[in-house]
Length: 234
Image (tube, rainbow, N blue to C red; front, side):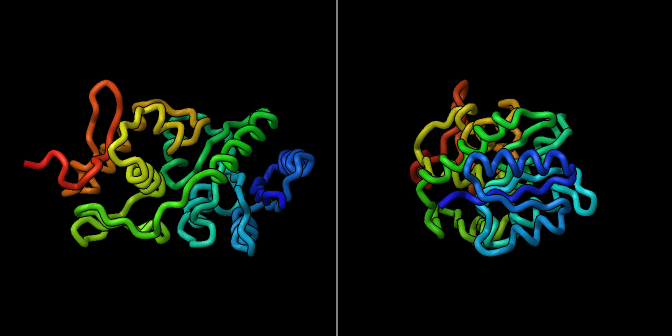
């Protein structure tokens, strides 16, 4: 069964080009020219396997559309690739903050976009699902609901911070370089710098509060999530 890709793009010519190119590659498509239409099509059953999302839409911003997809159970895990003419790093950071999996700056090569789509879909097909509930010392995580508690007090994480935390949890005791985290959390094609990793790890630690020491800095290499909650304690 072919993957279904939802295209949300208000430039009619680009929308038609993407629709034609994806169908030619064997994908099924749904097409929307506004944010509202895109949300309606995205919430249809079955949900799309991937979403291509323009930021500059005529009614609702692409950032808000992405945020709504991430707040809805049926589309929470659906990969989102942002398509935009905005090329500044801050724009990319905002996109990843609300849960985008990749960020492609216009104008772009259709062939390159297809490669990114294949890479994301292939990676998702081989990923082992995380347990729905994880308890690690002071930390409790509900992966299905995207909720986190520290000492039974809920802390609010962005979609990207949550993805960073669950990546650490799935690799307890293993050192993760900044490049590895960029590849696996921000996506292999994310055009951001390694200092972005440091910034987000710092924010994540601040939000984890009493559990912040579970994430250790390995000087000159990257980061490591403790193998056991009591590791390193006296």
